[in-house]
Length: 313
Image 1 (cartoon, one colour):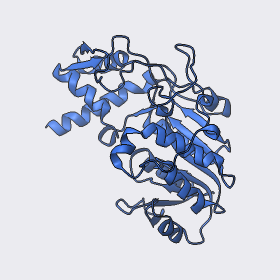
Image 2: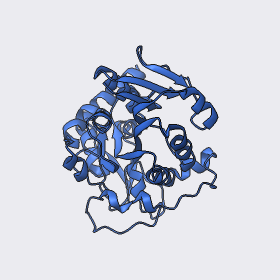
Image 3: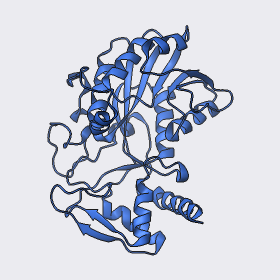
């Protein structure tokens, strides 16, 4: 049994991770602002992670084997957490994102066209950290989500008091009514209604992961391995927007209607005009086995269709 603290843990993948940690027999503590209590048997600390004094007070004298941070979005939040947990944990795992590799948001080393992107393209130890940017502003943070994650990773990586690992998640799908982004429902609705889907002329492929598989990987990263540094989390198989829509079309019996957009025009989710699909080779080398996207995608679509039908009834 390990003592594990989850920051966040009240929604979607975080909630599922907490359930799996508890089922595996670990002693789990959840920290959030109090809006959603954890399952019975899980310790609940109510604190705002942005308030260092309040967070430190809530932690008291507690120590943990691992901390899993589901909701770190800025270098300021990372710095507060690094100070608050220094001396309290042996290991710190942060959930990050595929978007750290998006060449539209940062000047990154080029990779050969079509080559899955490895972790070392974004090296946190060398990344510039700017604490004085308006990270507290919600609109700024939304527009600079990828950069906030890159800088948060950089802060933790440079903190000598923490053994730090980051899990860079692919686009997450599945979960039916819980589906976090609503992007799968977006495509189901448009294809079912015959509404146009705006796509790039040469849409590039990307990578996905089912929310249960991401929870499995976070459980593995937390309890079954002690790697440090970033690791990419994505199911096997690249898929572009038309491939995603084709799976939905089979299950809805409706053909997608596409509209090719002009340069600079907004596209539908998952239509990309640039390549940054991740490689999952490091996670495999460390011992994690991934499913194939097309193995789980039809059931995820079917689940979302059931939710849509129930809501329309």
